[in-house]
Each structure stands twice: as structure tokens, then as C-alpha cells.
Length: 125
Length: 106
Image (cartoon, rainbow over all chains, first blue to last red; front, side, top):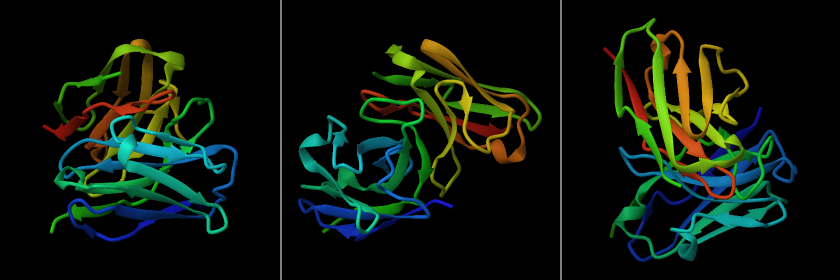
């Protein structure tokens, strides 16, 4: 049974870098059938895709966040990570990691069939 | 591509049929359109991908249809657990979500 779990600081100061890790259990992050992605949701608002990564390290980013985002993968630990630099109050959100299925999908992003429970990141000094 | 969902809120009773709309500002290639359900405090749950394919374990009262710029999610008979927020998503060369439709108990 696949599980994804986000971890990282729940509080980040303005202008600093937000760092989160997603640990995948019950499946291999090295599978050729999936991307691994990050999605966020500000409190009371809708969903925003941040970006995704393939086990090879190929990345795909939301153009609106691309200049501040880095997603990386550590296949030895079955983890992938998100870094978002120069955060502001607008970056306060629940951050989800998710598995994106490549079944009947091609391109830089696919639908998410498994999600982590999400972690709230607050931006405040 | 911008996805516009309507209505913003749908007030219905259990047993009724729900019809949710998702309109894209440009044609969605290869029907790369998905639908998700989200309940308060929970992560979204995949319902439909490829515009009309049900995800694993999704009851057949949920059905998706459409192509091009107009897509629809139908819930044939609302169960108490179906009252939630629903999002459409376009994926592929770029990925965006619609603003959501809340299905609430009338």
C-alpha cells in the first residue's frame, strides 16, 4: 500500500527558503511509471501545482514559480524534496506531495493518484 | 490554459443528481482532464482521469465526459459522503486546476 509523507519545518521566516521532503513507502520512487510532484493549497483556497520530478532527475515546474523552485530526488532514500526560495506570506499553504501517474499520460505533468496528507507551512517572522 | 468551474456552489439533497462543469480557455489535448474530490482537512482524491476513466475504487455513480474545452462530472445519486469540493485539472504539457465547485447539502 503506497504512502507518501511530507516532513519539514512548519514555520519559515519571510525571505528565507522553505524546504520539505516527501518520503515514499510501499513503492519505489525509481519506477518508470510515475512522476513525483508537489502541490500547494493556501488556507481556504484552491490547488496550485508547483512542479514534479522523474526518478532520473528530470524536472517540470510551474512557470509562475520556476525562478524560486527546486525539486530534487534521492532514490537511495526513496525521497524527493522541494525548496522554495524567498518566501513571502503568499507562500503560506498546505503543501502536498503526490504521485503522478504516467498511465495514458505524457508531457511534463500528469494526474495525481496518490497524495500525502499535507503539511501546513506558515510564513511569519 | 485557464479552467473555469461552475457553479461555484451546488446545493442538493442526497439522492439527487449533480452536474459539475469545467470549461477550458483553450482546447485540452488528448482529453488530459482529471477530476478530484476534497473533503475538509483531507488531501484531494482522484476520481476521473482522461476525462472519462474512473480511478481505482471510485464508485460508478461518478462519471466524467467531454472533450475540447467543455467537460462535465456527473454524480448520479448523491450519497452523504459525496458532499465535498470538486476540482478539475488539466495536465500534460502544463498543469492547472479549476477554482472548484462545492457540493453542499440543501
